[in-house]
Image 1 (cartoon, each protein chain N blue to C red):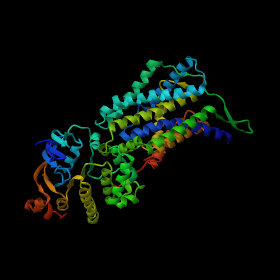
Image 2 (cartoon, each protein chain N blue to C red):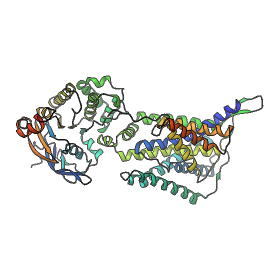
Image 3 (cartoon, helix red, strand yellow):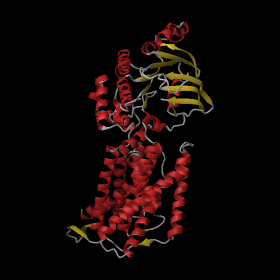
Image 4 (cartoon, rainbow over the protein chains, first blue to last red):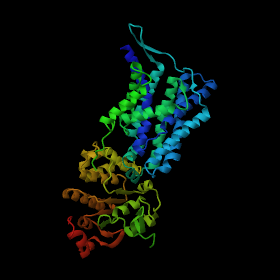
Length: 305
Length: 249
């Protein structure tokens, strides 16, 4: 039971990270109908920028950890958002009225570009960082000596995710930008007849998605204590799976899918085998899609016209 | 044509050509709408009426010719900037946002011209006066409304941008006669009370020409006839083509 509780905590933390990335996939899919395969690499870029910013701040002699983390968070979000904006601007927008597969292929190309760019610029070696946030709480000490731990970094990951999700939900549901985004998602032509600058709104979608991925990248760095140029690939595929599992196009679905993939992966590793954790995650995806083709929270397309 | 004359039309379309790929939908259209007028554009399916409405908004872009609004050339203006000039369209198929509430759909209209809170409130009041049904439906999703309610919402959304020119594409399509009459009455009220200028596309030529001050008949991407509403209603070729022969009557 204690063991299970511990794995549950670990799974939720991993799931939060996946969820933050998955939102970027699902948002872009909702509004432009393409899978942004470069999004995993945007997450990786976010991790690197967090690391670089951290090292710069430390080298300036800054020691207040909360202040450092806040600055790292903001800088990483801002610069990664710029990457997201640029990718859309140079690789997707020129292809917007091309055939359907063109932006998808362009996205795969963009993914390679970002991966290799990071490898060349930062080197191929894994970049470790010493634990920045240490300590935690012992929740329960079992009879067999097994201890259920909730570390401070886990708390920070979950709280940051919850706060960001609340902010993001508010943005989408109650601000003009959010309304414009939903309008573009439902009918771009009509949105433009109502004065919505569709290009700008799509750009903002990429910017917001990239900023959330940057947060995920930073959380990954803090939690696992490392980044490398290739980490965007697997994390990206997992988050994409999460988005599809939750119902691509659905924002709560992306978060739910992320949590589920995180939990499945962790529990499978804990009880069966670490080697087959990816097989487990993808198998569940396949099973869900056979019975619920639109994902868990996706909507079947039955709207009155 | 003297630009400063008080009879300068609010919307003037000259020699307008537009195409979808290689298919030419507008082949040199001339049309004017004066301030305070209701102008009807009638014609068969596929004549190019809806294309004309959309070309005013730059979708598709005009290949040749000129669109002037309030004396200003708007032919190349980006689509999203047209709405700011206070031209509103209730397009073919209504195109309300199905997964937004009625209130949000109306807010999208208000956003089009960056309406103030006061404008928004008075706009809502005006719309609820015309279509009391919408008031009861404010929290409901657009996609769950009936066809008639959706049409009211599409017109209401257009009105929320406080337009000077309201363009309506087939507002009576698919509606029960009673609802259609409600919609036509609302258009007449808006024109008489607020002096709103209206360009209306209709297949229901009888209703449209009775409502309109003037009308144009479009055939195959060209205007073939124009005149006052009652003149056109008397023309034997109109009666034969759009009134007596058609099932719509």
